[in-house]
Amino acid sequence: MTLLDATVAAIWPVDPVAMAEARTRQDRLTKPRGSLGVLEDVAVRLAGVAAACPPPMPSPVALAIFAADHGVHAQGVSPWPQEVTAQMVANFAAGGAVANAFAAQVGASVTVVDVGVATDLTPVPGVVSRKVAYGTADLSEGPAMTREQALEALSAGIRTAGDLVAAGNRCLISGDMGIANTTASAALISLFTGRDPASATGRGTGVDDAMYQHKIDVVRRALAVNGYGEAGAVPQGQDSVLDALAAVGGFEHAAIAGFILGGAAARVPVILDGVIAGAAALVAAALAPDAAGYCVAGHRSAEPGHAVALAHLGLRPLVDLELRLGEGTGGLLAHPLVSAAVRVMHDVATFDSAGVADKER
Ligand SMILES: O=C(O)c1ccc[n+]([C@@H]2O[C@H](COP(=O)([O-])O)[C@@H](O)[C@H]2O)c1
Ligand SMILES: Cc1cc2nc[nH]c2cc1C
Image (tube, rainbow, N blue to C red; front, side, top):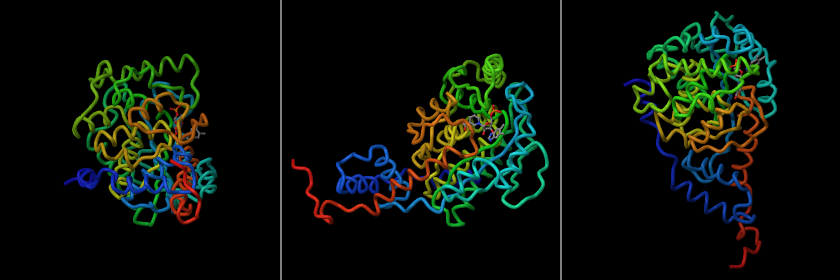
C-alpha cells in the first residue's frame, strides 16, 4: 500500500455527532442564537474535525511553505525572474518575509519545504529538503511531471503534515512559494472545475494586459496539449486525478494536496491560504472527498480562480483583503479568528450557568 493510499484510507468524514453537540452548545451560550455568524460554523466544524465538543484550541499552529519552480516560466507568464523562488526561500529562513512577520504575530512556527526549487539550496536550519526535481517541465508543451513525481511530491506533503502533528501542532497552515505558480494553479482549477481558463486565470504577481492574455492562451494550450481539450472532463478516480495533477500542476500544489490529506488523516484542521492552496485542495478533495471538511479557507485571494475553487469546494473564506502574496499570509491572518471561534466554546457561559434569562418563546 502506498503512503497516499494509507492516508486516504485514514480520512473519515468530519464527525456528525460532535458537530450536532457543538451546534446545541452554541445555542446555549449567552448570546442570541446565530449572533456569531460564520464563526459559529467554524467552531462547529472544528468539533467535527476533532470529533470532540468543545474542540481543542487550534494551537500550537504550524505554517509549512512549500517551494518549487515551474518550467512554464519559460513562456513569459510572470514578470519575475525564476531565481526569486530560491532567494525567497533564503529570506524565509532568515526570518525576513511577510510570512515570518505574520507568523510571529499569531505565534506560528515556520517550516520551509523545498519540493522542487530549480537550484541547489544551501542547507540552512528551518528549510527541509524533500526535492522531487529541479523544477517541473513546461506544462504548455506536455506533462509538467511524471505520475511518480506527482506521488513523490504528494508524499512530501503528507510527511510534512505528519511530522508537524507528531511535534504537537494542533493546526496546520499551508503556504507556497514558486514564481509562475499562478499559471499552474489556473490550469488545475480549470481542469478540476470544468471552468473556462479565462475565468480561472488571474494576474498573479501583477502581469500587464498583454501578458495576461498570453497567460490565458498558455493555460488553454496546456489543457489541449495534455489531452484535455476544452475544459469539462473533470478527473475522477485516483489514476486520472494523479495524471491531471502531473499534467498541469506544480510540485508545491502536489505537496499542499498531500499536506491537506495528512492533516485530515490526523484529524487536525488545515487553514488554506490563497489560489495555490485552493487549486491543491481541489486535488486533495478529488482524491479523498471527505478531506474538504478538514479545510478552513483562510482568505479569498484577489486571484479570480481562487473564488472559483472555493465555490467548487463549498468553502467560505474568512478574510477578504485583496491579498495576492501567497506564502501562507492569508491563512496566518485567519488563525486568530479560528482561535476566537473555538475559545467561545470553552469560555463562554451558558444561559443556565450564568443565570441569564433565555429568549421567551
Ligand atoms: O496566494 C495567492 O493567491 C497568490 C496570488 C498571486 C501571487 N502569489 C504568489 O506569487 C508567486 C506566483 O505569481 P506569478 O505571477 O509568478 O505566477 C508565487 O510565489 C505565489 O506565492 C500568490
Ligand atoms: C518578492 C516576492 C515575494 C513573494 N512571496 C510569494 N510570492 C512572491 C513573489 C515575489 C516576486
